[in-house]
Image (cartoon, rainbow, N blue to C red):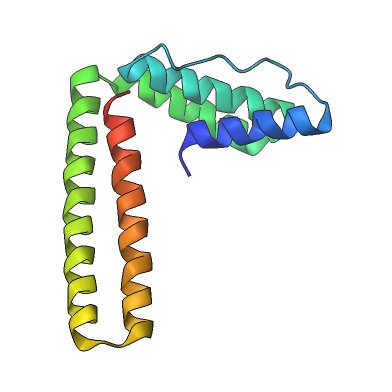
Length: 133
């Protein structure tokens, strides 16, 4: 699960249970590239602190330090483009599997192939969203 989804889930849980994290989550949507990545990790650190999850907090602090040392916008963009190509390839593969299942005519195989295709499409769409951040 992407870190921003986890941050949103933590924020939603706080809203539902009427608690506030130690530090309010920052809106990272206006930031792009490495700055957005740093912001999301910082939000995850705040959520871990609010939950008193020291192991997760320590791991996230290490991840933030590594990201700050190694992240470049061009490298991040290249990684995201490669991820989109990979997900697109997987989606094509799943479309072919569905086509073959339909040719065989077994409904259980068709249903399974359809579920796999839908999952691949969802992953592809998520990769596209990530590419544009």
